[in-house]
Image (cartoon, rainbow, N blue to C red; front, side, top):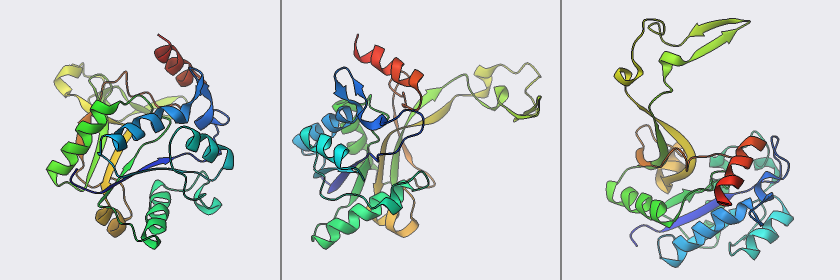
Length: 232
């Protein structure tokens, strides 16, 4: 392994769309456990050095430890609310380890609400990041239909097109595909994060995932889709 990497799984207690979203059961296990499993496999293969869950909740901490993650601290409430940024919880974790005399070259952030990863794509992402020398890497899926030709803002009942050519019959395949960030994998150099307070650099490198693996659990419908997928 090249870089010394801290893997952080954020799992605060509050959630709006689905109550207790991070620990709701899917396939007989809490949602959080799917991400912990992937992260622990990375550690087993020496691709990351430390796996922690950053949470403000004792119940979540207990579940995380049961499934093999370390929970060395409880996250302060001031950086655990709806308005808290991911950079806040990462910097908090880095500061904790700094006081312990431990330092990391990079941080891998894995959100429990985007659980359909796997060792192969994670290993590929880490190796690509280390080889590139880039400040950050993000996972995306390729989208060949959704672009600004078919997108609008709404004002009352009137639509305002994002692209002035929206009604000229431009074929979407001529417009080119876009890549959509799916929230599954974020890797950032610690030095860049501390300097800029950003997880994503101006020109991040890409690890591509399939659209079907890019589900992000935000609604009950998302959860039902995930459950169907995992129970096949």
